[in-house]
Image (cartoon, rainbow, N blue to C red; front, side):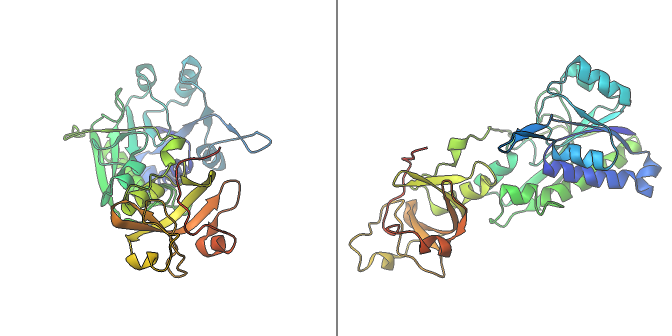
Length: 338
């Protein structure tokens, strides 16, 4: 079973590395699993010098002597290059492009895709942030057949990752750079499906239940509305790590909130202080063992643990307070001078 793997970012590269290891194991060889090539995005310009940096998937493939195909668009030239590798099955995770009918026709066994949600829930490009924002107790991980309509293919395998309410998108997807909850679950599901395919079992089950599509995340989605509860804001912060990060404004200067913890408002915070008012966005008197507390909606408070001024390094809350004059008592808002 000759495979073309398609993907780009770190999490996808970690899955690729695991599949390469499986294909070269005795079991993988016995099943005839072979990764004959990798399809990934073209190198992108990064840094001040705008150096062209290959994707993590491209780096992984080259380290393992696997041919790499990099195309801006999947047109005739791309299809010809794929044909030359003679793949039978397309395996993809986080490639970021739609496969058209002409491209899918190149694979006798079709294509399978890893999607980190309990399909048909959270179809689309941002399923992990969507699960965190919704406060879900589990994150679904699904391998589905690739269909012409996005994320509507039959389900081939599915499992769930338990969530405790402290996870970030970065942690669930990239983990420690070697493994993560999504990578571990996704790899196991891919291997399960590859074994089924090798034994002639290709059937999946149609998706059932209510569906929704997750939207593209925009930079402005990171703006904090302090009228929301601390729980809602905490979810927003965790969902938008690593991008776009959540932020607010203090005297017109952007302030990113990188780590926090929800709590309840303590009336004692306002005693003996005429300066402090109980309005959302108010920075409360500092408590060293708690964090920088900020008033939120619904009688809640957010204890901020890590934050960053625009153009500065990120700091823990104790270091931040050492140089933050007149911060206590100010009211954070959305009036940012970019």
